[in-house]
Image (cartoon, rainbow, N blue to C red):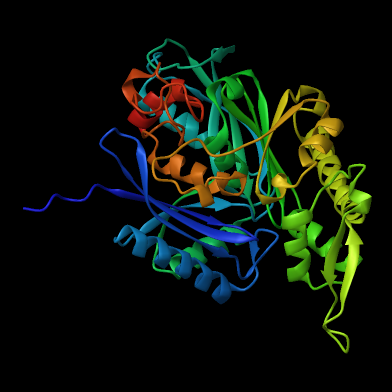
Length: 424
Protein backbone atom coordinates (compact mmCIF):
# COMPACT_ATOMS: atom_id res chain seq x y z
CA UNK A 1 0.00 0.00 0.00
CA UNK A 2 1.50 3.36 -1.05
CA UNK A 3 2.16 6.01 1.52
CA UNK A 4 -0.29 8.92 1.33
CA UNK A 5 1.15 12.28 0.44
CA UNK A 6 1.38 15.00 3.06
CA UNK A 7 -0.66 18.19 2.61
CA UNK A 8 0.92 20.71 0.27
CA UNK A 9 1.25 24.47 0.56
CA UNK A 10 2.05 26.87 -2.28
CA UNK A 11 3.37 30.44 -2.32
CA UNK A 12 2.96 32.74 -5.32
CA UNK A 13 5.07 35.90 -5.59
CA UNK A 14 3.69 38.12 -8.37
CA UNK A 15 6.11 40.98 -8.99
CA UNK A 16 7.06 43.50 -11.64
CA UNK A 17 10.32 41.72 -12.52
CA UNK A 18 9.52 38.08 -11.87
CA UNK A 19 6.80 35.61 -10.93
CA UNK A 20 7.75 32.77 -8.58
CA UNK A 21 5.89 29.74 -7.23
CA UNK A 22 7.15 27.54 -4.39
CA UNK A 23 5.42 24.30 -3.36
CA UNK A 24 6.27 22.71 -0.02
CA UNK A 25 5.17 19.92 2.25
CA UNK A 26 5.70 19.49 5.97
CA UNK A 27 8.63 17.15 6.49
CA UNK A 28 8.93 14.40 9.09
CA UNK A 29 10.82 16.88 11.29
CA UNK A 30 7.83 19.28 11.06
CA UNK A 31 9.85 21.70 8.93
CA UNK A 32 8.75 22.89 5.46
CA UNK A 33 10.43 21.05 2.61
CA UNK A 34 10.47 22.48 -0.90
CA UNK A 35 9.32 20.00 -3.53
CA UNK A 36 8.47 22.34 -6.42
CA UNK A 37 9.95 25.57 -7.80
CA UNK A 38 8.94 27.68 -10.77
CA UNK A 39 9.98 31.22 -11.72
CA UNK A 40 10.25 33.35 -14.82
CA UNK A 41 10.31 36.94 -16.02
CA UNK A 42 7.07 38.70 -15.17
CA UNK A 43 4.56 39.74 -17.83
CA UNK A 44 1.61 42.10 -17.62
CA UNK A 45 2.72 43.72 -14.33
CA UNK A 46 3.83 47.32 -13.91
CA UNK A 47 4.61 48.99 -10.60
CA UNK A 48 3.27 45.93 -8.81
CA UNK A 49 -0.15 46.29 -10.48
CA UNK A 50 -1.70 44.14 -13.18
CA UNK A 51 -1.87 46.05 -16.46
CA UNK A 52 -2.43 43.11 -18.84
CA UNK A 53 -4.59 40.41 -17.28
CA UNK A 54 -4.05 37.73 -19.90
CA UNK A 55 -0.27 38.19 -19.94
CA UNK A 56 -0.16 38.09 -16.14
CA UNK A 57 -2.28 34.93 -16.05
CA UNK A 58 -0.05 33.25 -18.62
CA UNK A 59 3.02 34.02 -16.52
CA UNK A 60 1.35 32.65 -13.38
CA UNK A 61 0.18 29.52 -15.19
CA UNK A 62 3.70 28.92 -16.49
CA UNK A 63 5.45 29.10 -13.10
CA UNK A 64 2.74 27.08 -11.35
CA UNK A 65 2.95 24.40 -14.04
CA UNK A 66 6.75 24.25 -13.69
CA UNK A 67 6.50 23.93 -9.91
CA UNK A 68 3.78 21.26 -10.20
CA UNK A 69 5.85 19.27 -12.69
CA UNK A 70 8.82 19.32 -10.30
CA UNK A 71 6.62 18.39 -7.33
CA UNK A 72 4.69 15.76 -9.30
CA UNK A 73 1.54 17.18 -7.74
CA UNK A 74 -1.33 19.54 -8.48
CA UNK A 75 -2.12 22.51 -6.25
CA UNK A 76 -5.51 24.13 -5.84
CA UNK A 77 -4.67 27.23 -3.78
CA UNK A 78 -1.86 29.70 -3.17
CA UNK A 79 -0.81 32.38 -0.70
CA UNK A 80 -0.17 35.58 -2.69
CA UNK A 81 1.79 38.77 -2.04
CA UNK A 82 0.35 42.28 -2.39
CA UNK A 83 2.38 45.19 -3.75
CA UNK A 84 -0.39 46.82 -5.74
CA UNK A 85 -3.17 49.09 -4.56
CA UNK A 86 -0.96 51.52 -2.63
CA UNK A 87 -0.75 49.44 0.59
CA UNK A 88 -0.86 51.70 3.64
CA UNK A 89 -0.72 51.42 7.40
CA UNK A 90 -3.42 52.81 9.66
CA UNK A 91 -3.90 52.70 13.40
CA UNK A 92 -7.38 52.39 14.84
CA UNK A 93 -9.03 51.47 18.10
CA UNK A 94 -12.33 49.99 19.19
CA UNK A 95 -14.16 49.44 22.46
CA UNK A 96 -17.06 47.24 23.54
CA UNK A 97 -18.87 46.67 26.81
CA UNK A 98 -18.42 43.38 28.67
CA UNK A 99 -21.93 42.22 29.66
CA UNK A 100 -20.73 39.44 31.96
CA UNK A 101 -17.96 41.61 33.45
CA UNK A 102 -15.45 38.92 32.46
CA UNK A 103 -13.90 38.91 29.00
CA UNK A 104 -15.22 36.01 26.94
CA UNK A 105 -14.54 34.63 23.48
CA UNK A 106 -17.65 36.38 22.18
CA UNK A 107 -16.46 39.73 23.59
CA UNK A 108 -13.09 39.39 21.85
CA UNK A 109 -14.76 38.40 18.61
CA UNK A 110 -17.07 41.45 18.72
CA UNK A 111 -14.16 43.74 19.54
CA UNK A 112 -11.89 42.57 16.73
CA UNK A 113 -14.75 42.59 14.22
CA UNK A 114 -15.47 46.19 15.17
CA UNK A 115 -11.78 47.13 14.91
CA UNK A 116 -11.63 45.91 11.32
CA UNK A 117 -14.48 48.19 10.21
CA UNK A 118 -12.06 51.11 9.75
CA UNK A 119 -12.87 53.27 6.74
CA UNK A 120 -11.62 56.82 7.43
CA UNK A 121 -13.90 58.14 4.68
CA UNK A 122 -12.13 56.12 1.95
CA UNK A 123 -13.04 52.66 0.71
CA UNK A 124 -10.04 50.41 1.36
CA UNK A 125 -9.68 46.65 1.68
CA UNK A 126 -8.08 45.33 4.86
CA UNK A 127 -5.15 42.99 4.15
CA UNK A 128 -3.90 42.62 7.74
CA UNK A 129 -5.63 43.50 11.01
CA UNK A 130 -3.15 43.11 13.85
CA UNK A 131 -4.17 43.62 17.50
CA UNK A 132 -1.29 45.55 19.07
CA UNK A 133 -2.53 45.91 22.66
CA UNK A 134 -5.75 45.75 24.66
CA UNK A 135 -7.20 47.91 27.40
CA UNK A 136 -9.51 47.08 30.31
CA UNK A 137 -11.55 49.95 31.78
CA UNK A 138 -8.99 52.40 30.42
CA UNK A 139 -5.92 50.49 31.63
CA UNK A 140 -3.76 50.10 28.53
CA UNK A 141 -1.02 47.68 27.55
CA UNK A 142 -2.92 44.44 28.21
CA UNK A 143 -1.54 41.67 25.99
CA UNK A 144 -4.12 38.92 26.59
CA UNK A 145 -7.41 40.00 28.22
CA UNK A 146 -9.19 36.65 28.03
CA UNK A 147 -10.83 35.73 31.34
CA UNK A 148 -10.02 39.07 32.97
CA UNK A 149 -12.67 41.19 34.70
CA UNK A 150 -13.76 44.52 33.21
CA UNK A 151 -16.76 46.56 32.12
CA UNK A 152 -15.12 47.97 28.98
CA UNK A 153 -12.76 46.12 26.64
CA UNK A 154 -10.70 48.06 24.09
CA UNK A 155 -8.08 47.29 21.45
CA UNK A 156 -5.46 49.21 19.48
CA UNK A 157 -5.06 47.73 16.01
CA UNK A 158 -2.62 48.12 13.15
CA UNK A 159 -4.36 47.75 9.80
CA UNK A 160 -2.70 47.30 6.44
CA UNK A 161 -5.09 48.30 3.67
CA UNK A 162 -5.10 48.60 -0.12
CA UNK A 163 -7.31 49.85 -2.91
CA UNK A 164 -10.11 47.32 -3.55
CA UNK A 165 -9.81 47.38 -7.35
CA UNK A 166 -6.15 46.35 -7.29
CA UNK A 167 -6.91 43.53 -4.86
CA UNK A 168 -9.82 42.37 -6.99
CA UNK A 169 -7.60 42.30 -10.10
CA UNK A 170 -5.01 40.26 -8.22
CA UNK A 171 -7.64 37.77 -7.08
CA UNK A 172 -9.09 37.63 -10.59
CA UNK A 173 -5.65 36.85 -12.02
CA UNK A 174 -5.21 33.94 -9.61
CA UNK A 175 -8.78 32.69 -10.10
CA UNK A 176 -8.27 32.75 -13.87
CA UNK A 177 -5.50 30.20 -13.36
CA UNK A 178 -7.97 27.88 -11.57
CA UNK A 179 -6.39 28.57 -8.19
CA UNK A 180 -7.90 29.71 -4.92
CA UNK A 181 -6.34 32.76 -3.27
CA UNK A 182 -6.01 31.34 0.25
CA UNK A 183 -4.45 34.45 1.79
CA UNK A 184 -3.01 37.82 0.84
CA UNK A 185 0.20 39.09 2.46
CA UNK A 186 1.76 42.54 2.07
CA UNK A 187 5.08 42.09 0.24
CA UNK A 188 7.39 43.73 2.82
CA UNK A 189 5.67 41.82 5.62
CA UNK A 190 6.32 38.58 3.72
CA UNK A 191 9.96 39.59 3.18
CA UNK A 192 10.27 40.14 6.93
CA UNK A 193 8.80 36.73 7.69
CA UNK A 194 11.32 35.17 5.34
CA UNK A 195 14.46 36.92 6.58
CA UNK A 196 14.22 38.48 10.03
CA UNK A 197 15.34 36.94 13.30
CA UNK A 198 13.49 37.02 16.60
CA UNK A 199 16.04 39.37 18.14
CA UNK A 200 15.77 41.81 15.24
CA UNK A 201 12.00 42.13 15.43
CA UNK A 202 12.06 42.46 19.22
CA UNK A 203 14.78 45.13 19.29
CA UNK A 204 13.43 47.02 16.28
CA UNK A 205 14.17 46.61 12.60
CA UNK A 206 12.99 47.89 9.23
CA UNK A 207 13.05 45.67 6.16
CA UNK A 208 13.16 47.39 2.78
CA UNK A 209 12.26 45.24 -0.22
CA UNK A 210 13.55 46.65 -3.52
CA UNK A 211 11.27 45.23 -6.19
CA UNK A 212 11.25 45.89 -9.90
CA UNK A 213 8.53 48.55 -9.93
CA UNK A 214 8.19 49.55 -6.27
CA UNK A 215 10.24 49.66 -3.09
CA UNK A 216 8.32 48.67 0.04
CA UNK A 217 9.11 48.60 3.73
CA UNK A 218 7.90 47.03 6.95
CA UNK A 219 8.95 48.16 10.43
CA UNK A 220 8.86 45.91 13.48
CA UNK A 221 9.01 46.84 17.16
CA UNK A 222 8.77 44.53 20.18
CA UNK A 223 7.94 41.65 17.87
CA UNK A 224 5.05 43.47 16.16
CA UNK A 225 4.54 44.84 12.66
CA UNK A 226 4.05 48.57 13.32
CA UNK A 227 4.27 50.23 9.89
CA UNK A 228 4.27 49.44 6.17
CA UNK A 229 4.73 51.72 3.18
CA UNK A 230 5.89 51.96 -0.41
CA UNK A 231 7.42 54.32 -2.95
CA UNK A 232 6.81 53.88 -6.71
CA UNK A 233 10.47 53.43 -7.62
CA UNK A 234 12.32 50.16 -8.12
CA UNK A 235 14.99 48.27 -10.02
CA UNK A 236 13.29 48.74 -13.39
CA UNK A 237 13.77 52.50 -13.02
CA UNK A 238 17.51 51.95 -12.61
CA UNK A 239 17.54 49.88 -15.82
CA UNK A 240 15.57 52.59 -17.64
CA UNK A 241 18.08 55.23 -16.50
CA UNK A 242 20.92 53.13 -17.90
CA UNK A 243 19.09 52.49 -21.17
CA UNK A 244 18.54 56.22 -21.61
CA UNK A 245 22.00 57.30 -20.50
CA UNK A 246 23.88 54.69 -22.51
CA UNK A 247 21.55 54.74 -25.55
CA UNK A 248 21.21 50.98 -25.30
CA UNK A 249 18.19 48.65 -25.46
CA UNK A 250 16.44 48.02 -22.14
CA UNK A 251 17.38 44.32 -22.17
CA UNK A 252 21.06 45.22 -22.56
CA UNK A 253 20.76 47.86 -19.85
CA UNK A 254 19.35 45.21 -17.51
CA UNK A 255 22.27 42.91 -18.31
CA UNK A 256 24.83 45.68 -17.77
CA UNK A 257 23.21 46.55 -14.44
CA UNK A 258 23.33 42.94 -13.30
CA UNK A 259 26.90 42.20 -14.41
CA UNK A 260 28.67 45.52 -13.93
CA UNK A 261 26.30 47.75 -11.97
CA UNK A 262 27.43 49.67 -8.90
CA UNK A 263 25.88 52.58 -7.06
CA UNK A 264 29.22 53.85 -5.71
CA UNK A 265 32.29 54.15 -7.94
CA UNK A 266 35.77 53.19 -6.77
CA UNK A 267 39.02 54.87 -7.77
CA UNK A 268 39.69 52.23 -10.44
CA UNK A 269 36.23 52.25 -12.03
CA UNK A 270 37.09 55.15 -14.32
CA UNK A 271 39.61 52.96 -16.14
CA UNK A 272 37.33 49.94 -16.48
CA UNK A 273 35.58 50.12 -19.86
CA UNK A 274 32.49 48.07 -20.68
CA UNK A 275 31.04 47.34 -24.11
CA UNK A 276 27.59 48.83 -24.63
CA UNK A 277 25.37 47.64 -27.54
CA UNK A 278 23.69 50.61 -29.19
CA UNK A 279 19.99 50.98 -29.95
CA UNK A 280 19.09 49.15 -33.20
CA UNK A 281 19.08 51.16 -36.40
CA UNK A 282 21.34 51.61 -39.37
CA UNK A 283 24.29 50.98 -37.07
CA UNK A 284 22.67 48.15 -35.13
CA UNK A 285 25.95 46.25 -34.76
CA UNK A 286 27.83 49.20 -33.30
CA UNK A 287 29.23 48.69 -29.81
CA UNK A 288 29.87 51.72 -27.68
CA UNK A 289 31.84 51.96 -24.46
CA UNK A 290 31.25 53.33 -21.01
CA UNK A 291 33.37 53.25 -17.90
CA UNK A 292 32.09 51.61 -14.73
CA UNK A 293 32.35 55.04 -13.09
CA UNK A 294 29.92 56.44 -15.67
CA UNK A 295 27.53 53.59 -14.94
CA UNK A 296 27.78 54.33 -11.22
CA UNK A 297 26.99 57.96 -12.00
CA UNK A 298 23.67 56.84 -13.50
CA UNK A 299 22.76 54.23 -10.89
CA UNK A 300 23.81 56.09 -7.75
CA UNK A 301 21.44 59.07 -8.03
CA UNK A 302 18.41 56.81 -8.57
CA UNK A 303 19.31 54.69 -5.54
CA UNK A 304 19.77 57.84 -3.46
CA UNK A 305 16.41 59.16 -4.64
CA UNK A 306 14.72 55.87 -3.72
CA UNK A 307 15.95 55.93 -0.13
CA UNK A 308 15.40 59.66 0.29
CA UNK A 309 11.78 59.11 -0.75
CA UNK A 310 11.60 56.23 1.71
CA UNK A 311 12.99 58.45 4.49
CA UNK A 312 10.38 61.11 3.68
CA UNK A 313 7.63 58.47 3.83
CA UNK A 314 8.79 57.18 7.21
CA UNK A 315 9.02 60.72 8.56
CA UNK A 316 5.63 61.79 7.20
CA UNK A 317 3.46 58.71 7.71
CA UNK A 318 5.49 56.36 9.89
CA UNK A 319 7.33 56.32 13.20
CA UNK A 320 9.98 58.82 12.06
CA UNK A 321 13.51 58.30 10.76
CA UNK A 322 14.96 58.75 14.26
CA UNK A 323 13.16 55.56 15.34
CA UNK A 324 14.94 53.41 12.72
CA UNK A 325 17.54 51.23 14.46
CA UNK A 326 18.58 48.71 11.83
CA UNK A 327 17.75 48.10 8.16
CA UNK A 328 17.62 44.82 6.26
CA UNK A 329 17.62 45.04 2.45
CA UNK A 330 15.93 42.46 0.22
CA UNK A 331 14.83 42.32 -3.40
CA UNK A 332 16.82 42.04 -6.61
CA UNK A 333 18.05 45.66 -6.73
CA UNK A 334 19.42 45.41 -3.18
CA UNK A 335 22.24 43.22 -4.52
CA UNK A 336 23.79 46.09 -6.47
CA UNK A 337 27.18 47.02 -5.08
CA UNK A 338 27.03 50.20 -3.02
CA UNK A 339 23.30 50.10 -2.23
CA UNK A 340 23.86 49.16 1.42
CA UNK A 341 26.46 51.90 1.74
CA UNK A 342 24.09 54.58 0.40
CA UNK A 343 21.29 53.30 2.65
CA UNK A 344 23.53 53.52 5.70
CA UNK A 345 24.61 57.05 4.82
CA UNK A 346 21.02 58.28 4.43
CA UNK A 347 19.59 56.64 7.56
CA UNK A 348 22.72 56.57 9.71
CA UNK A 349 22.14 52.99 10.91
CA UNK A 350 23.57 49.52 10.43
CA UNK A 351 22.47 47.85 7.19
CA UNK A 352 22.72 44.25 6.05
CA UNK A 353 21.57 42.26 3.04
CA UNK A 354 18.74 39.87 3.90
CA UNK A 355 18.48 36.31 2.65
CA UNK A 356 15.67 33.82 3.28
CA UNK A 357 16.14 31.68 6.37
CA UNK A 358 17.17 28.14 5.37
CA UNK A 359 14.36 25.94 4.06
CA UNK A 360 14.95 22.27 3.30
CA UNK A 361 15.56 21.67 -0.43
CA UNK A 362 15.39 25.37 -1.35
CA UNK A 363 17.67 25.63 -4.38
CA UNK A 364 20.61 28.02 -4.29
CA UNK A 365 19.22 29.81 -7.35
CA UNK A 366 16.13 30.93 -5.40
CA UNK A 367 17.70 31.51 -1.99
CA UNK A 368 18.97 35.06 -2.54
CA UNK A 369 17.49 38.44 -1.51
CA UNK A 370 15.30 38.53 -4.64
CA UNK A 371 13.30 35.55 -3.30
CA UNK A 372 12.73 36.79 0.25
CA UNK A 373 9.05 37.53 -0.40
CA UNK A 374 8.38 34.06 -1.86
CA UNK A 375 10.07 32.39 1.12
CA UNK A 376 8.11 34.56 3.54
CA UNK A 377 4.83 33.66 1.87
CA UNK A 378 5.65 30.02 2.42
CA UNK A 379 6.37 30.61 6.10
CA UNK A 380 3.08 32.50 6.40
CA UNK A 381 1.20 29.62 4.84
CA UNK A 382 2.85 26.88 6.90
CA UNK A 383 3.02 28.61 10.29
CA UNK A 384 0.88 27.22 13.12
CA UNK A 385 -2.70 28.57 12.98
CA UNK A 386 -3.29 31.74 14.93
CA UNK A 387 0.28 33.07 14.79
CA UNK A 388 -0.61 35.42 11.92
CA UNK A 389 1.73 33.51 9.62
CA UNK A 390 4.68 33.78 11.96
CA UNK A 391 6.73 30.87 13.08
CA UNK A 392 6.33 30.27 16.78
CA UNK A 393 9.24 30.73 19.13
CA UNK A 394 10.43 27.95 21.38
CA UNK A 395 8.65 29.69 24.26
CA UNK A 396 5.19 29.14 22.78
CA UNK A 397 4.45 25.52 23.73
CA UNK A 398 0.99 25.41 22.16
CA UNK A 399 2.53 26.11 18.76
CA UNK A 400 5.96 24.65 19.28
CA UNK A 401 7.64 23.72 16.04
CA UNK A 402 10.70 21.49 16.43
CA UNK A 403 12.59 23.03 13.54
CA UNK A 404 12.07 26.67 14.42
CA UNK A 405 13.73 27.22 17.79
CA UNK A 406 15.83 30.40 17.65
CA UNK A 407 16.34 30.69 13.92
CA UNK A 408 14.42 32.52 11.20
CA UNK A 409 11.50 34.88 11.60
CA UNK A 410 10.16 35.97 14.93
CA UNK A 411 6.98 34.57 16.45
CA UNK A 412 5.19 37.87 15.98
CA UNK A 413 2.27 38.37 18.36
CA UNK A 414 2.38 34.67 19.24
CA UNK A 415 1.32 35.88 22.70
CA UNK A 416 -2.16 36.52 21.33
CA UNK A 417 -1.98 33.96 18.54
CA UNK A 418 -3.04 31.08 20.72
CA UNK A 419 -6.33 32.55 21.86
CA UNK A 420 -6.94 34.31 18.50
CA UNK A 421 -6.88 30.93 16.77
CA UNK A 422 -9.12 29.45 19.47
CA UNK A 423 -11.70 32.21 19.10
CA UNK A 424 -11.73 32.31 15.34
